[in-house]
Length: 290
Image 1 (cartoon, rainbow, N blue to C red):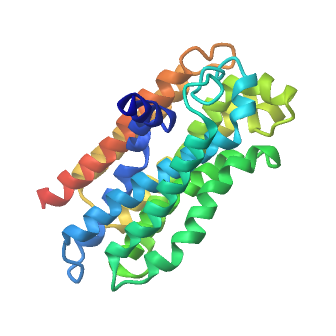
Image 2: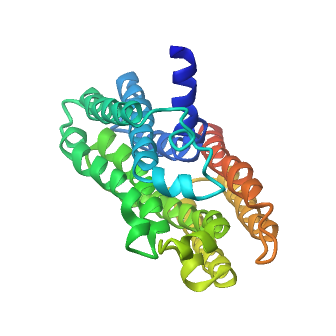
């Protein structure tokens, strides 16, 4: 029974989708450890992994709690765990509280650097706040991307105790990339959101315009990637890799058409997973190659 409940909780938060954000935190950490005055520490790596897992789990579970009635009314999401009765509301709330507390506790691993502990509550509140965004702003997609873009900056602060250009550029990559693909994903619910008076770019301006905004967002992602390559002093391997990522982003937009959204999940899950993990791998190979 407990194993089944744990499985449902992992499905609820889509634990496997941690792959979208974790590689960027790890890439930021590797770039920070590559600095001559920031040697690698196992406690820092453990802290990054725990903070990423617990923060994302808390935010996803909280989102399911807040959106339970909306999910139940939407045919696409009606089978999610709370509206389907697979998990009770109190159990998901308890899970959210435990993950939130575990996230804050995990920042203690970075002591004597106190900044992760000091910033943990504001960061957590910002992450949880995303769940309310579509109730009042059409730009809710970029609240989500802003939440995820915190990971490279927070990682850099946790390791080096400062904010710098390199993690800021990596965060810009996430901001425009996630915002763009969340717009693509939201196209599936444009009619439902409009009927429920929920805010999104597709429900406000229609799917064709939403796809153009997502394309512009992904073009800015490509610009940020090449800026990261230049200012981080990365080499040929990373340059070749981000050129491939640029092609993948364009392929993503080729998959999704205003009159055919059947391949949105392919673009959202498969292509984006390749991009996030791929950027981490080419970053590691590039730094090791030199």
